[in-house]
Amino acid sequence: MKIKKGDSVKIIRGKDKGKDGKVEKVFPKDGKVLVSNINQYKRHLKARSETEPSEIVTLTKPLPEENVVLVCPKCHKTTRIGYKLEKNKKLRICKKCKSEI
Image (tube, rainbow, N blue to C red):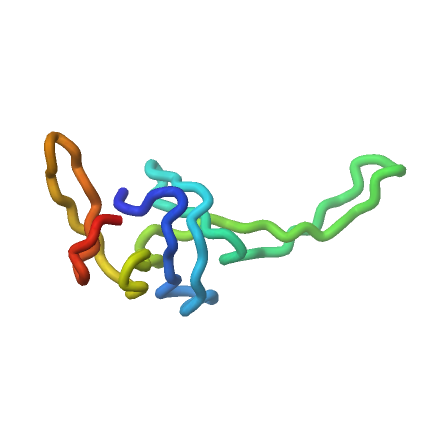
């Protein structure tokens, strides 16, 4: 998975298309990412006891990795991610401006 926690991404498909956000969590086995304040849904919770009220909670659901694209921190453009090996380290680079991410 090329997208990491803390990356700045732009949504390219779905109901939130065009919005920007920061990756909060990555689910590599499922191929999904959780982006803050994107893909939010309402859930109705029933009261478990008489003292606790029922409520409507807003949840943020994970998006498939294919629906987001990385925004380069230097050139501020949407880009694909490349790799460069440097002294036994694998670095992620921006395909457009060739800078390290």
